[in-house]
Amino acid sequence: MTPQELRALCLSFNAAVEDFPFGPKTSVFKVRGKLFALTDLDARPLKVNLKCDPEDAVRLRAEHPDQVAPGWHMNKRHWNTVTADGTLPDHLVRELVEDSYDLVVAGLPRADRLRLDRP
Image 1 (cartoon, helix red, strand yellow):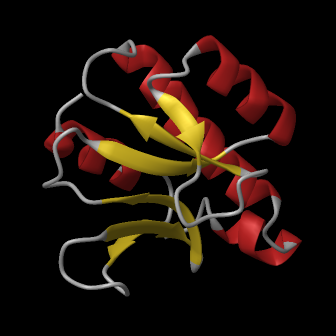
Image 2 (cartoon, helix red, strand yellow):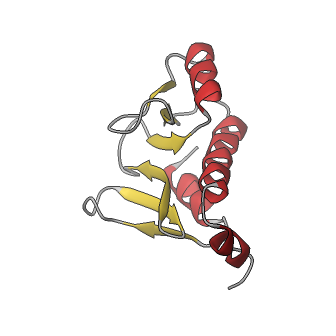
């Protein structure tokens, strides 16, 4: 997955925005103010921090030890750092990004979830 594809994917979700609270190099993708992906799009290899169900996080780390690690500078129980350098299939990276978005949306107040379908 290229950095441009990752950025486009993150911004394809309802109400997703890109922000730079940690400086101009770190893209933070949020939905209703809550982070669902964090990356340096210029880094090589490309890595992205994604929210993950704790049980899935452990499983993914065991299945892909060279590409999935506990979230760097994040709560290690709920976040993974995923290396998106082409070693993992793009469809899996897309699923992990989507899962991260879905987990964050599920944790939003009901009123915010209902507004996601509205412009």
